[in-house]
Image 1 (spheres, one colour):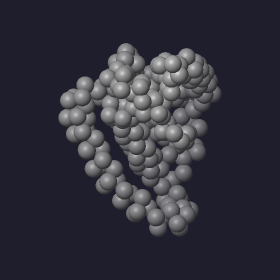
Image 2 (cartoon, one colour):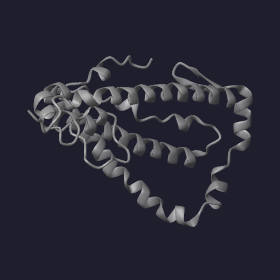
Image 3 (tube, helix red, strand yellow):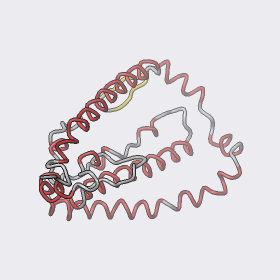
Length: 213
């Protein structure tokens, strides 16, 4: 009898998807190697979770530092005018941060979804660079917080979507989130109704990740 749909659409997609995920992991390893080369080029090493520069590199950094007064006087007028609006956005960012913490604590616990570690997304290490003056460090800290928070929020939303609606869009997404490749194909009605519980609880890859020291 002719079938309108493949018997197991999700299974047919698995080999191709797994191959792509393996290639991504390979590229990530290559990226790590390149980053290690950068560490050597800029003369720093990791010590107790922090980047420590060699003494000669630190001396060069101090020479290149632009003083705060000079930095302000030579700053762009448009940057000065728009700065209040930029920094005013810290209010909704802070409210989002607080809301995400409450949401995870209550909802993720109820659904059995692994919580997203905030510390995996928000870093303030650029503030230790001595070739930056106070204002540059403040700007870097703000950018670190805003962009890190957005990544943190995206991962929380991704895990929520996997639990409630793990279905891919018909359109190609410009930047799909980390959980998207585990979703059902658009139109895979049989797979969705047959395997929804399995997919919505498929967080094995997260639970088996070894925490960073």
